[in-house]
Image (cartoon, rainbow, N blue to C red):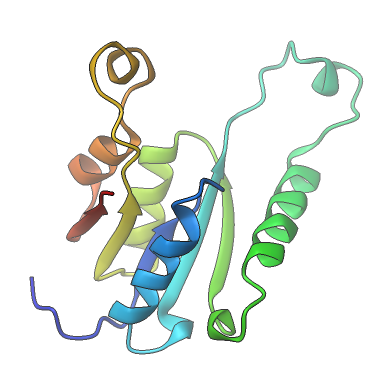
Length: 142
């Protein structure tokens, strides 16, 4: 992988403490801020969830709220021009598919470093993205 500036860098955003520093790293690696694509993946709602049953929650509203929450975190001037997208589904698959759709040259993501039984039960989103991605993936650890 060349460390030359990338035209398109995808950054999964999960609202953890590691999310903003990861976006900052992506900005350093991208040619310009408009080449950074921040993506958040919402879980699919089950048909048995109360909000779905009572029609008080819909996907377009969820997507809008998530986009607004990301924009509130990316208010600094250095984030001007960064692309924000929200998808619904499995994070590993959605991030990999989105990266392919935008012809990303790199995916930058934080690792939460779960090990043992937590990793076995929860699964590793970072591992799935690495396995499914069409491009190099930079996993940032503490």
